[in-house]
Image (cartoon, rainbow, N blue to C red):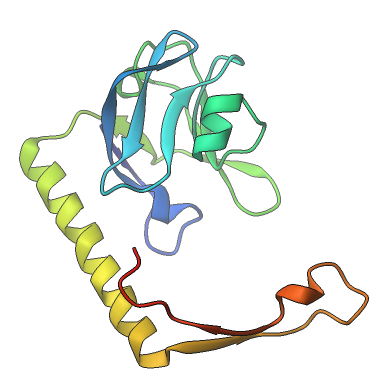
Length: 157
């Protein structure tokens, strides 16, 4: 299934792309699709009669966190006719251009290729930087112990 409609500058643009059906995986009586390229984003049906896109924990436990959803009783996401909503950082807003549809083998190949190119580009940029410094939390703040310099680990994906 191809999820499309959000442009580069739109909220949740990064979740647009090809989602592949996970053989034998169901949630609430509907199939589950995983974003192509091994991404940990899933399209699944909630017990609230919503198609949602969220992480693995959300999909498997029903945890109430997700980034895109639509109220619908459609059996598969490509059958949805209602308006999808995206998280803009403070609330869910209508995203009338978003739709899910069946995609061709060529569209799938191109999407997977794009993901791989983006991954390679990100890794090349990370190799240039090598180390990053995380700062901002004071001694008494939560997560203060996570502040410091982080070094890129080679050969990890």
